[in-house]
Image (cartoon, rainbow, N blue to C red; front, top):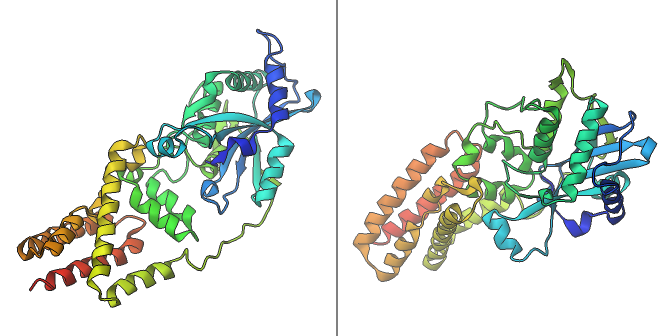
Length: 375
């Protein structure tokens, strides 16, 4: 789930070598020796938005062939026309690229992120089948895929590829299957408060489903520890290729204190225009969530009940406040409070409940203050 621009990570020499090998003849790819190894690489989380969930890659090494290549399904191109619109809509094309192992590990050392390896106990024919498939993919349209946050990313692509080579759904999720995607994802945003808050309010009902899909790098690492193939452990014990102590980020603004200060400011800065501006912003965000739910192909954005809090009806309330229509203001206030009550009930057993409770309370109070001003 490492979101990295292709121009920054593509190692031209290693890709050229793989292309040369895969084009050796039209019928025969480079044969791996019995000493060849296949590994799943799991890269630690980072503090940039693209690295918060870690990353998964495949390594194929064959010292007899002077081969050590890492295949990465997490590449995309910033130069793609309409990049932002495509990413938001959910039809941005990601693709697989190849790196030399040395360049790959140097990149993560530069980023200060640990890398772990799990060698897979595969027969030479299965290793060859995997290697041939990867090299064929590099040379065909199969290298592209439409990214989906949960259903199709760097981890799910590796899982699907390995299961296809193994001939069965051997690798499955073995941990945290009784909790929701929202609860699984929430801790990954620790020390990134506004990212945690933002994803909590933009995700809809999809992330409240049971987390049955194996889609996170460290979930794959844990699952491989206990996965068996032909009555033996599929992977060898985890080996740390690069061990770097994580750095906990500190930000003067990206924390709960500025969030709380902002909400308190809304309460004590008792200015009509400030209150109306805030309620207008809440309503506009609600319209944005509704639009994204219909426009985007990301299923995580659909059916977003957070519009009960970021409620477009707030825009009507602001309009009638400006129009001084007291009767409409009174009725709309009751409608909005009803939506807030329903929202609070829905949110009770959700991970971000305590984060959003102050926002519910302050927004309710501001609507009350507006309503009292009509009397």
